[in-house]
Amino acid sequence: MIKIGLIGKTNTGKTTFFNSATLATADISNYPFTTKQPTIGNANAVTLCVHKELNLQDNPKNSRCIDGWRFIPVELVDLPGLIKGAWEGKGLGNKFLSVAAQSDALLHIVDASGSIDAAGRIAEPGSGDPIADIGDIEEELVMWYLKLLEGNRDKISRAINSGSDMQSAIADVFRGIGVNEEHVKMALQENKLENHKFDELGTQESKDFSWSLRDISKPTLIVANKVDLPSATDNFKRVREEYNDMIIVPSSADAELTLRRAANRGLIRYSPGDERFEIKDQSILTDKQKWALNFIRKDILDEYMRTGIQFAINVAVFKLLRMNTVYPVAEASKLSDKSGNVLPDVYLMKSGSTVEDLAKEIHSELAKGLLYAIDIRDGLRLPINYEIKDRDILSIISARKKK
Ligand SMILES: Nc1nc2c(ncn2[C@@H]2O[C@H](COP(=O)(O)OP(=O)(O)OP(=O)(O)O)[C@@H](O)[C@H]2O)c(=O)[nH]1
Ligand SMILES: [Mg+2]
Image (tube, rainbow, N blue to C red; front, top):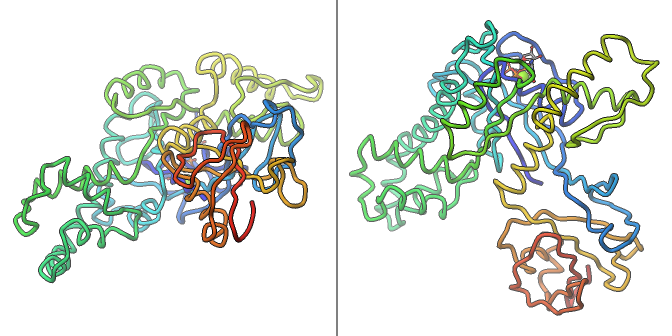
């Protein structure tokens, strides 16, 4: 399952984001370092289901289908807040940087309203500087990569001296945090270091290399949170200008939490990611609830089109990680599994994945005897090296087993 980590300074709204996306009830407060341990929860990537286009009724198994939208489970990890100096052991967050690094992608949550000071304490809205906050956290991550590199210099040197190439010797040190040889190769190339001697790598070169490696191996999206506060409007624009090489999603985790909890209690009709909600019965709402819902409708949904929570997860999965959705079916004629469930499963496959990759993902036995796949839409036989496209519906034909 895809794992998405929530990182950022303390008090930026990571747990509020997490609770709203997972409907968990982890502690939220305006004290710094409320979250003390990483917490894992289930959220979803949401995409238009293929069943409508095919005019079929589906029976989803590994996912859910609501109003024509497929909800595909992904793992969300809430992490303790970071502060400047975390890589040296300051705050709590440093202990968990390795947990963050095990994620496939990171959502960097920023307080766009400027309601926290440099140390993450709650301050007058507008007084904090989200641009500096983003820089601080980016720096922490890079320093942490650098520390791993510098701390393992001898080990890497020894591996190279006993015949390893530089790429795999470096990759070995970072393997536990999702870095592979290709990432190392790209980071070396980006800094023109591929023909350099490892032992002659200077301090600046190591730092530049660590910066590239962090960037390449851990795709990151900036979530500009707390846009419900007026001081966020200008900051959001500034963040977008300053970090124009990154994707930035405005959000109000607070608003999403209100909407999801209201929907859960049957007060409103709202599906995550929707641009609107419907009040079921005005007469059962208190004045305070009416005011809050009206505010969300006017100041967030009208202004930003969405609360940004579901959108941020979707952008991470489909844009940052470039996942395609594919629907494998065992019975080609019925578009079902062996028990007759129509379009039971949807898999997220990285763009460039082949029929063979999909077969391996489903079952190793299926992959062993793999022959070809049938494209359900046109009956074409697709070779095992066919690159899967988004929304493909495939029946995999194997000498061992059918799916
Ligand atoms: N106005 C506004 N406040 C928010 C929003 N999201 C979170 N907050 C508030 O910001 C404060 C911190 O929220 P948390 O979710 O605990 O922040 P955190 O990043 O998990 O903090 P740590 O666990 O300490 O790192 C709380 O008072 C929240 O109510 C938002 O979208 N809008
Ligand atoms: Mg928290």
